[in-house]
Length: 125
Image 1 (cartoon, rainbow, N blue to C red):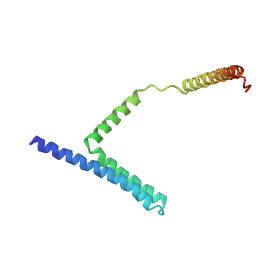
Image 2 (tube, rainbow, N blue to C red):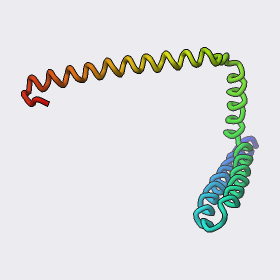
Image 3 (cartoon, rainbow, N blue to C red):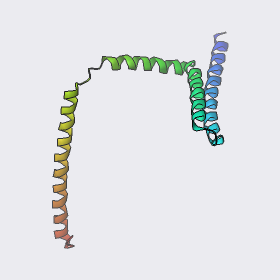
């Protein structure tokens, strides 16, 4: 009996995913077919259909697992200690200065290497 229930469950999951992909494909197709309709109406229709597709996808096993993962990720983001504005500004300035210094070093090395190669090859670039 459990095999029968499992097969039925797998078939239902497959059907749900087919409905989801059918809805999303329908949105893309409808958007190209009804290109002369107002963008606002097409966008609202797309939002509604995508919301329905998301609702159907959330009712599947993988959809439920994804929602659980998203909830856990949101909880973890709340635990992060974000830098203050002053720390973020100082770090940004340090990165910009380091980038400027490295770009000048690489520019200098490039100039030296070009002169060495032109001296060796006699091209006089």
